[in-house]
Length: 125
Image 1 (tube, rainbow, N blue to C red):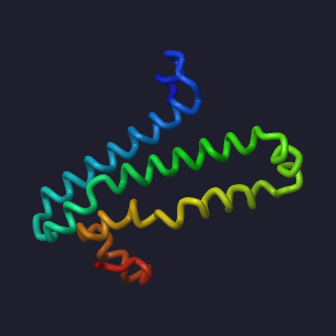
Image 2 (image 1 turned 60 degrees about the horizontal axis):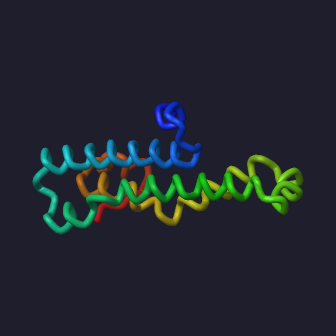
């Protein structure tokens, strides 16, 4: 974020760059895990590359959308009446429908197998 802002980039561009960098880092982690654990099916590996990047770019879009809405006149008037925790809750809820984009590659690689005992909602495909 800071290097993009330092060289004159907008806050939206800097946010997108920060989320994209995080997405690339997580894609690298998935690549390393799939190289080490070759027991995962080929279709699982091939179909999940890029999903972490999509998840982080989606979150960047959500944050940019929230910023744009916060600056609009209508939401400035209503925003004072909405409790901050509710705004945070609504922003988090925008990421839940695509949370599988983040978690599925790790589940496929067996990274969360030991979590299933404590969190039965984490399912292996």
